[in-house]
Amino acid sequence: MLREAFLIHQDTLYVSRDATVGGRFSSPVAALVSGIAGMLPDRSRAILRERIHTNYPPTPLCEGVVKVAAKRMSMLDRDANRELRHPSPPFAREVEVYAPPALEFGAGANCAGSRTLRPDEVAPFLRALQENARGFKRVSALALGPDGALLGYAWSTAESNQTLHAEWNLARSIFAQRGGELPAGATIHSSLEPCAMCAAMILSLFREGEPVRMSFLEPDPGPAARNTCLKSGSDLWKKAGRPVVEMI
View 1 (cartoon, helix red, strand yellow):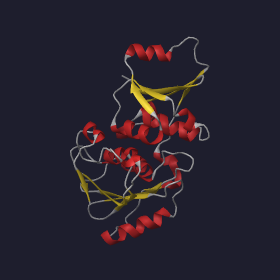
View 2: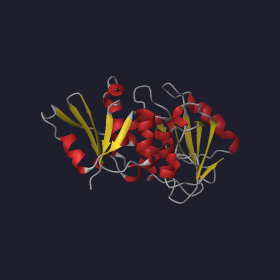
View 3: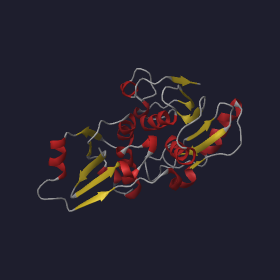
């Protein structure tokens, strides 16, 4: 089955399908939200207030993206999907939304070379990266291998697209340049506690069954960081299969 997500705003149907993204980060909902935010920055907030419909059970990444950057979502059965997709009169147009792969995100992320960081160098490095960040929250993130090798780093570029958080940029860059999977024993470090969307992206970087190792410099008291898939006992944590999370 080809998974898809769509929403209807005024006389336009916006739709995203599995073909627009790939690999372990495949999420038509994430592609839909990020694509609309990138294509129509001036109108995206109004458009994304509409209900997003899927023809598949939403994943933790879908749930997280909607919680942070959209409004609401529901899964449709076949009859309901047909009724919404083919109303009378028909839509004036249908727009297939495309979310660009990580390599097109530009300067918001970088996969590092042979540099290593000692534990005491992590916080200063994150603080330095924050100087590049753009948007309401100036956040940075990095990935370290088990030997301290710097696998990648990123900062938020969310001034025009509210989905481009630091962890989102980091995960997409690692997916594009390293196959989307961190080595065993790797750790994600962030300057701020990850939101529900970024927590799901971080979870996707770790092999299934391996503990998710991460740290952050500051807690986020806002609603976006509550009930994420990396908080033991939360609803999204249960939906994600109760992953083991090690906070460093």
